[in-house]
Image 1 (cartoon, rainbow, N blue to C red):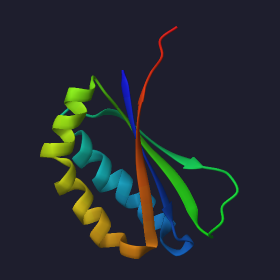
Image 2 (cartoon, rainbow, N blue to C red):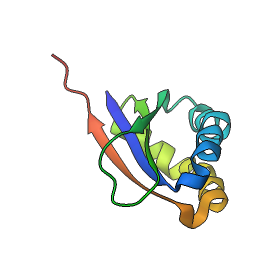
Image 3 (cartoon, rainbow, N blue to C red):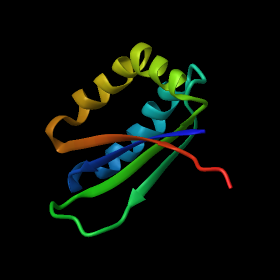
Length: 102
């Protein structure tokens, strides 16, 4: 199983709007095709250099080929409105992880 995580840092003044957007728009758009599943939005706690809040947006995906397909076919349409809406008040980075079964 592959875990696709994007960690976002958002300014204090937009964090509530960000959460609402993620729940109402970003997650439904991201999972519409079925390539990404099991969405989970989490607050990240830790010492922050900048004021604001950090959030982890996590999905599972069956394999790397499916993630590549989602990235090439769907991600642009999904991330563009997010970036337009929050502009310089948000930054993020993505990580791809493989679940270790035990």
